[in-house]
Length: 175
Image 1 (cartoon, one colour):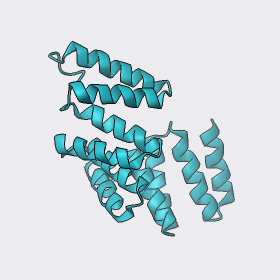
Image 2 (cartoon, helix red, strand yellow):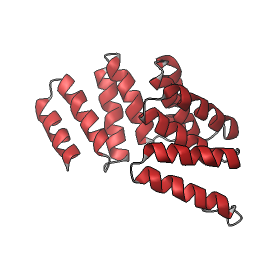
Image 3 (tube, rainbow, N blue to C red):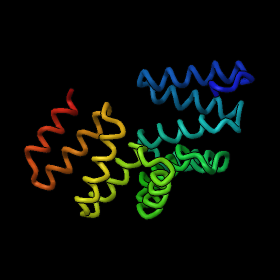
């Protein structure tokens, strides 16, 4: 949207408001703001993607799935829309579907840290700790400033009985 000088000023204002609410941790307010955008600008995919992602974080996966499906309908090639769809399926326990979407995102964007992390969660849950650790290593490399990824990698190392590595990663997560 920022690259489009023809963007509707109302859309710009509403989107900035939604992003501000989201960045300040007001997830409910942000979801409401994204829904307002969806009503006024139903073809603006970012409102559907962002709302879906937030709803997943809020453990409202059914709503997230509806939002993600609309996002993919609007932008079928968008890695972020596909990521939102995979995350919603993961939240609903549709693991096989989620894996397919997350792998699709990683094929398109090999450094998509969130998709790498979510796929690692699935691998870990299925007992594939080496595969999970490999994905977490890639996620840390792609987004070293995100403490959640360090913490998850530390947990994976703990499961693998690498206590020194786990401690180092968990300490990094706190920094």
